[in-house]
Image (spheres, helix red, strand yellow):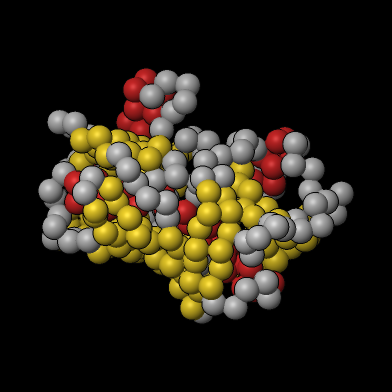
Length: 257
């Protein structure tokens, strides 16, 4: 089977994106998805995205982790597929699309994409970490000397032992300034550290505000792959108008044979 694909990255979080409006892609073939995402035997990516038709929105986003399985929401993937939709001419500067966690809005200006995330209704702050769901489940934990921290071993342990089969993404955070934080993330489904995680930095920004580490509602997050911004409004115990903002870059186009 031969088809065209596009490679995208958003602060180093990389994706294979396919225009599947004609529904040719064998969506049940998890082995094919995993093979495409394999960095040795395929294209190489943290995940694969399908852009599909939607009855009322501009498009539908279907997201697979690199292990080939359908996944929860991917923030950087949502930003990249919005950029792709503009590239295809489906939209101009604004998009509405449906993902696994519901409807989203995006604004695309050149290679900068602002993505509206879902409201966050519950943030659980404990003594050593914070847990919340920003479209995907996230464990947020403060550490010192993040640059030298063993993200893989500690992240894998927390992901499997604390959260068992369901699992959770695990974010390790170090504060740099009043509203600036460095973040490293172990992602479930990829089962490794990624250079950036959109739902992860969104979770970190909200967790830092909720736990009193910052009083700012616009936060800069430094990942290994670059900088992202998260802004939000808190109403009562809920976080609303949550936006994930940063670059989305088309890297190359190819043909899978």
